Image 1 (tube, rainbow, N blue to C red):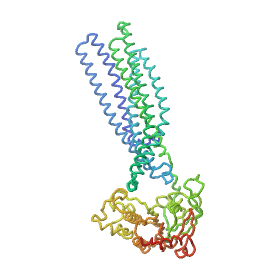
Image 2: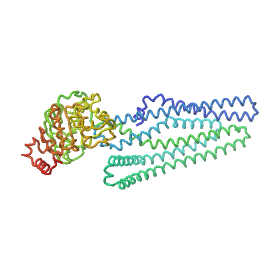
Image 3: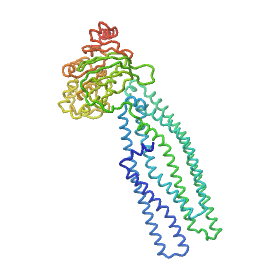
Image 4: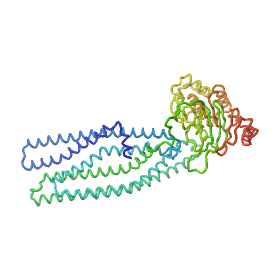
Length: 580
């Protein structure tokens, strides 16, 4: 785990190494100061002249200034290294998430990944900064101060060797109990973030059903659950403070007592006032070091679970990988399903798709109908290899999709979902997701084919109109048409519309289909729809039921041979759906 995290230091190695280096300088000077001060006190007691005192004073000032400069530089380098480390860590995490398949995303959940990219990275960043700075300073200070106190105080310094193991043992017991508790807390954090994400995303639904009070109560319950767990962990970690204070008070009582006793009993021959001053200063340095080590311990305990969660993402290999020698060209838009079965979970008993056999020639228009849960969307997700088949094979252009370079394949398969996403930015910027180099003329042409041009130019800002996050300032039908235009700009060999005209009226739907038929004859078009009118002029219509292709044929063939299709068509035409 540590090796994986240290790989994210990269371009910050210099600052990461300079931080402890300057900390050594700061600690060395700071630990030498009491020794010089003790000698000054002894010199004054022995009747030193002002020249000697001034010399000692200049030395002390220079050492103090040197220690301060080393501390400032160490702090500056630590801040730079910590920020750079966190940037690299977020970059690597985000890049890893981008490489994940849908199956990997399903495993972690969106809210958990967001927590790992934000809260967990911040915790690890704070621990990293503390480790390269404070975790170097405090142990060094402890070692130097104990060594110097032994050289000046002899057997009296054994007090520190008695106290330190007791404190270390107590901290280890606390850590052992705290780590499992933090693991549980972070999981509940994921659930809390999921609640927030779900609520914000569905705010319109919440308000339309006047369910604000219910959502507040649900969030309050989740928040209270996190609070209770955190309270238990904090109570455990709070033992750290009194344990620390106990060690401090033991040292504060025993050191002056034993030192004073030695001075009095020896008449100043074994130890003098200067040595007493030095030992007291070193004892305070040792106690402050112990206190800082205690703080480091708490931070590292908290960040330990965060680091484990981050590394869990970094160690996860995408379930979909490019082959060793991928095919780099898609010949045409033909699609073949050969004995295809698929399960979302390998351990599931039932297949989401079973025994699917299809041949779709390049340039054909295929309509797909079926009820909710009939696996229409699952079928089309296998074409662009968002999931791999469990059995059988899916071929595009006569080549198994598993043999293609995934980027090459997906660049030739454009998918427009029913709930597609627009990003904050202008209409032009959103459209150029399809082709970053598309000219303005190409944008207009694609929008005319998607029947989006008229409503775009009706606004004074035209194609420079700003789209709010998620497309909140355009209607559902407008959003769908912009997404269709964006997909057309990819100039794909296969275009898939997953119920992506559900929010447009039947007249606009018909105009879109007419444009496809007349202007895009070479593109294979798969149209998932709920309205028969949206697919009745297709070259082939598939009727899905229970994860299987229940029937396939033209509109006329299915009317004559398939009861499901006939019932849907009759209910929609007689119910007036097409004129709605």
